[in-house]
Image (cartoon, rainbow, N blue to C red; front, side, top):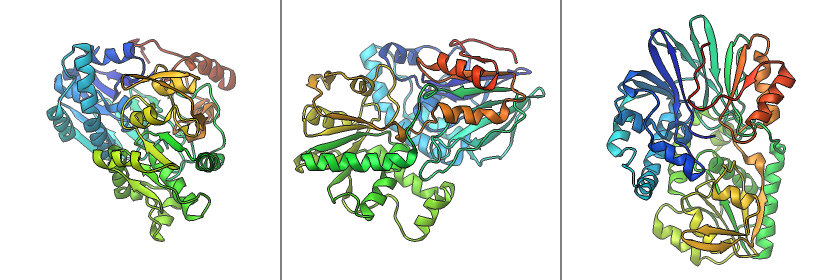
Length: 437
């Protein structure tokens, strides 16, 4: 379940953790246009776990409807979020027109939001009237955080999205303290198991080699944030070591190109291995064969380049973006392949293809799915079940309750696994439910 948005209240002071856009099935996305279940004017501050729009996408709407407080996040998150919000603006306008609804917000609201947004460092404590807040590295994307909140003598931690560690560039997530009373944990992969991370580079190499031999096109729908940078890092290693032939590799995503540039400005948040490469002169996001197509005209030229070739484009769930044009052209080609490397929400086009759909509707046309479908879940930026349980373990001695959130049909299964493994009460809360801690 996407669209993270939680409120804590103590002594009349109200704060939010995340304010995200709902994504996935159409019926669920319509809820983005509903009024907030609280008065934005009463919120004193918002704390953001990371930049993805399912955690930030309704912040401009919050501002539009009267929020006057401050927004806090780890420093890179602010810069990433601004790009992601601007990029999603036109999609939301189209969605509003389709539903006959007023637009959620406009560029002026985004500008107002950024004026209220303050970047802080990991472990830098923020003191409000009734709360103390600290950001801890969640290892999901650059600048991602778990948020520890203290108030009324209790401690609660919001996991945010936890990373599939150790991730290229950002390294390992940070484990929580042992003296936590309550925890909200994400469960996107709470009932799943990833392959080992080292194996995924070999799966990527095999996918490229097989597609090159077949004379086809390898399409990779990739989230512009983190997944794309992980791919570029590993393609850099494969290309420079001669493990893949030199074929055109296109990064066909203006947003991913811009975000990659931001990555380079926050190298002090990189892990030691990636930073050492950079210091030795290895440009992590540049290698032989890579072409970044920023403009629409540059993107169109890709069609004129004969196969074999590799195309990385957004969006990661094939719900929008340039990947749709490439899928429309090549999904029906038996020589080509679609490499799925990330989480596919229920109702998304990517999920339908992953589950074996033979015909899909793309840009107003029915398209046959004849190409090979390759799924490499180890590229997921989300921790799987064993990693989630491992992250919870340090807290099990004092934890009174765990709330399982931000998942889909596997949340109940994961809650049961928590009880069985850790002996701690775990609950899947209903939307809009309230708890007194």
